[in-house]
Image (cartoon, rainbow, N blue to C red; front, side, top):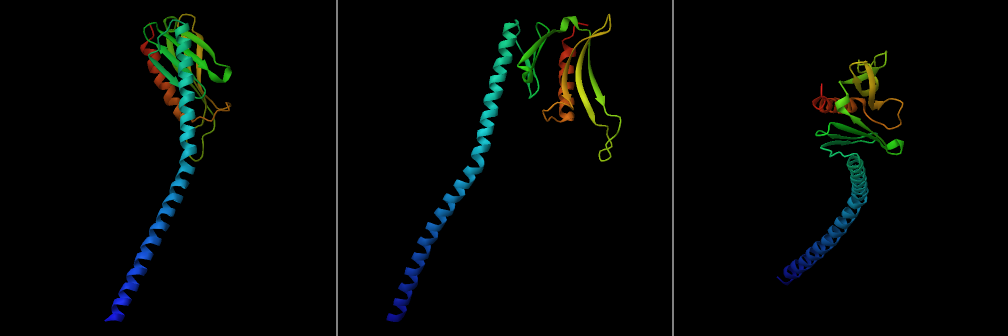
Length: 186
């Protein structure tokens, strides 16, 4: 009986040691896991934070330009190549090109008769997709009387160094074409 109780105490002691070692090992594994997760998530969170502050700065700049031109922007768009703002009450559109030292243009929509999307498509079709690749997408503003182009907003240009998807930019151009058409005085 004594041998059995000694053996049981021995196994209980070993079991307790195993559990303690396991918990130490588990806490170390958890710590390593947390460190690894932070190493991968921290740069992503930092990039999101930087993009957010950059967008806030660009939006502030767009609104300031609108205010300087007596505009209250009720619609706006921020992308890498364009900043757009529309004041529906004064029927004005502000277009800012960040890549050209924040040059901007204010387009008075009351002087525009027609808004149209212009797509330039390559002659050859893509063998994989069966579609012709888009080279350029722009939104043109045309004065109806002399049939002259007053201005254009380039949403996508194949030669531009900013890597944008043509289909996404086409959707964006369609969105702004609808907004502009609602504010034309024709």
